[in-house]
Length: 404
Image (cartoon, rainbow, N blue to C red; front, top):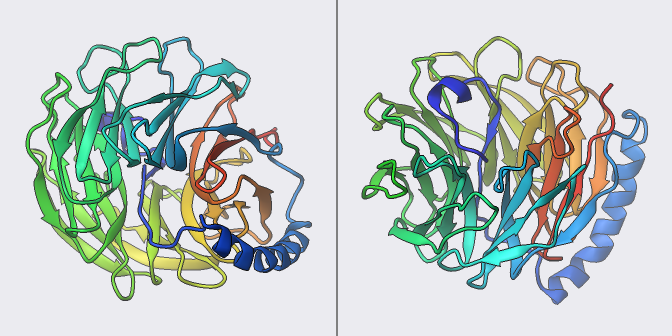
């Protein structure tokens, strides 16, 4: 995701840029066990979705990325040609950032891989040295965050790494202290904290300031939840019962502990947007440790607190990531949910009240569907989908053709 300044991010849907979880459908033995289960669920799921609406997305086009096990992606124009490009991070190998330059029309060139300082998981994009060229921030599994400064032609310089917690699982970028420079927040699921690094405006960062979280923080998203002009944070934690913790930002880039909310077990990702059109930011949280998988919605009160409002079932199980966008152009935010068991994307149409309309759409992707990001890839004004697939080592592109 592209980091935004406080004046521009406050009412835009945002989503986390990475997360960690313990179960990976990556081995041949596990795939063999799950295959019959997936086929049975998929037959039921497609039958249920048949009456939802006309097809909205073209079939997925898959692009190879490397070296293996891609886990997160972001979209931006890295070579300044006005065409969206892709950045994908992988948890295996040292050349763990793949850049796919866009051709226009929603297609992409062969991936070029860059050293990110080690196997990587989350990614955020922003101009960290204020030179007008987009850079990368990548969380590494070795306990560092690496900055790859962009050259403006789609290539990147060698990484500069900063120590953070032992396992960087989610990463966001924004100007937390209003100095005009982008800062970073990283969720660390091993040390149970969020580290904040304040940017110096030249591509370097100060030392991390840690904020304790409930156990095993996995997801991280930002927004102005109390409408005071400062960046706030929402963190999902896979504690015994599942928690969303809110941190309220101060003008100087520090954070105060806000309220916490119980959700379903093992919440993975969190997305931010105004789901009921009341001008206040809300939260959508994927809950994986349920069958069928679920999304919990917390409606914002506008003062930094939230009201748990809706819970609805998104897929057969394995609801691992959620993104928000108005996919059908009716002015209401819809939900795109990654189903890791069925290897695909579930689209649920929002009802404008924080819930969803009856029916759903399902689109197959590569194997091990894991993460989704939304962007207009072909310039038609409609939000498209990019999905990472951690078993087939691909990224899937699904173009939206359902908007009027």
